[in-house]
Length: 321
Image 1 (cartoon, rainbow, N blue to C red):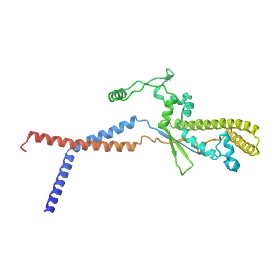
Image 2 (cartoon, rainbow, N blue to C red):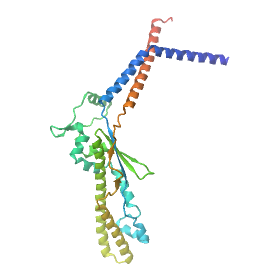
Image 3 (cartoon, rainbow, N blue to C red):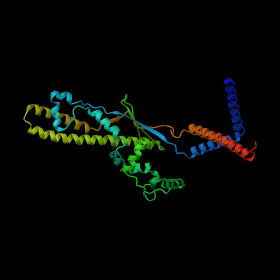
């Protein structure tokens, strides 16, 4: 008995599936039309799309002749803490860590925002060449609809703000990617733009500003430490204190000398920043495949919906059937 019920159920499922495939085949023209529309939309998108090139800059920790001062101070290392100096951490590693965290920092954005040539390219849609200033772009139809929808949903609409360091910092956070592998000493900065030359130059400028800023901070800090240690050394009486202060002073003199060099301070490029030879986004083949698949799926869904509507109308017109 159970076997008969199972056979009847399986036969019913097969019949329903066959009917479904038959209805889809009957409306193949509809599916083909939607598929063609999907492909046409993909082609139109590719014709109007802005192709971007991806630039990469690989950097490693800058080579340094410094070594930890704690090993040279031995048991007197604790006395050097009177100057507030940490002697147990590798200065090179700390500088590279600060470099990684500083890519999208406000200080870097402040320095780059003083470059009109960079700001004009990054915020090209807001630059008025005739007026030679940034102006609020006029909202198009799509933008106007978005503003209305946001107002209806209670989402705040913020007033236009002239491109400055804050907006540039937000731009860097959203568009410059930092790829860091814990198992590799190489860190990669990635940035995409429609102009491959600008993409490479922008990464190179971020590196230059960031590295020089860390160098300047380290030099200023070492100079302050040197002044403090020199004053303490003049008043120290115990030989142990004078020895520790003298070694700490020599270490800070070495730090200032390294920070005053023209060589890379926190990170040095493995190779100059370079952009891809061909556009990386969008990928034409992928866009066409997506257009084909989406169009076909929408066409099948429409065909099934049309079938259900037709059956509903037949039942409404012929209730006895």
